[in-house]
Amino acid sequence: MPTMYVCFRDESSSGFPPRTIDAVASLFDGLSNIDPTAYVGVLADRIGLAVVHGRKLGLLDPMGVDFKSTTTSWAWDLRATDELEGFKTLGSKNRSQFLPVLLVFDEAGITTSTFPILEYDVSQFRLIRRALKVCSERYPRLSFVAVFVDTTSRLSDFSPPASKDVSSRREGQMGLFEPFVLRGSYNVFFRPLTEQVSDWSVFVTSSDYLLAGRPLTAMTCGVITEDLKFLSCKLNCGLVLAEQGNGALSHMLCRLGSFVDPHARLAGQLVAENMATLISVSHDRERMMVMYLPEPKLAIAAARKWNHEGLFCNALVPSLQTALASGAVTAGARGELAAQITVLRAFDAVSIERTGVAGAAVPLIEVLTQLLPPGADVDLKQVVPLDLHDAQVACAQFVSIDYKLDLETLTELARLHCGVV
Image 1 (tube, rainbow, N blue to C red):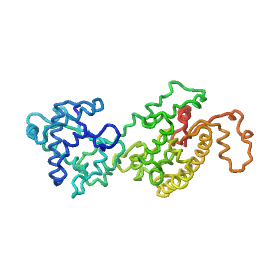
Image 2 (image 1 turned 90 degrees about the vertical axis):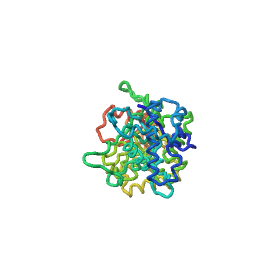
Image 3 (image 1 turned 180 degrees about the vertical axis):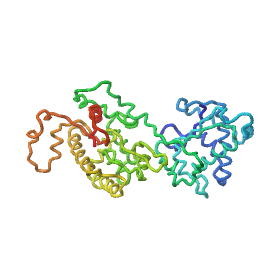
Image 4 (image 1 turned 90 degrees about the horizontal axis):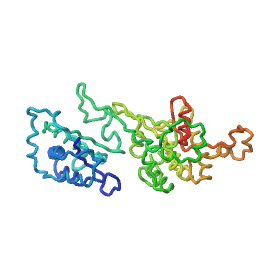
């Protein structure tokens, strides 16, 4: 499909793909000094020109081309609207007979918070959406599909719940597309076992568990401490310290098998800014299911903050208390959240003492010792079965499941260094 690609990423950002400067200029230059109606009209014509030139160039999937070379595809005379005259009427052909052009607006979250006309409280996203509609009506022979793409923006910015969408114009049986979630890249580096493993001792020395989760968490710069610092910043919305708000809370929740209320605004915020994973969205966009999936490396990054006593007591725990009090997060039917925190702290103490980081496989006896009350005089080897005296265990995080455990699931959890609720 011919593709015209626009990326709104900030010019100073080191992210990829970079901002498409020529594309943004071709569509939006000179529009800040006119009223919204004129803005939409001019932008509609420019979108039409983009579609016309897209048909001529036949650009394929932009991920397969050099982004620098795509800037030339936007080099045309913005005043050459006469090229659109032939697309104003359908004539003997209908829209479906023309090859559609794909218009991609990447990093589009910024358009929901950008207000290009200073004296009007209208976001760039709303203006673009109106212009797309006008373009479609003004030039019925143009066939195009516009897609707004963003990896971190809140869903509600683009599609608020139906009951709150002032722009909703649904009539009769017409409605929006069913929301969908793309999860194909999860565990792409964490290869599944090809056969059942009977000896779990191979998991003790393996570091494969650090590859689980999203490609972002599996990537490495070669120095584990730098990787963990980076992931901690991602949990905290790009900030260095998790001192307050959702950044502190995400450092707690990414290690716990907790439940976030699908109705709570927090659910969307955690996905947008704090590395939670969107599992599903209701068709009316009123509810979204989010959770922190098994990503041990991300959990280990959070554990660095857990084991900073001042930060843990003064920021992380209070953030969780606030979320529990508001009802946005539940502690479990029997208060399992408190038990998970206690067990994880015990594992962390032993792992950090032995390896310098949390999440490693450590002796069971030493973990149980950490769980004893101070001053307890107990010989654990007298109560732990003999065949478990040399057992190694690991737990970087807890995950919550709602189905019966089987050997395959237990093996996978062992590989991931995860506990289960």
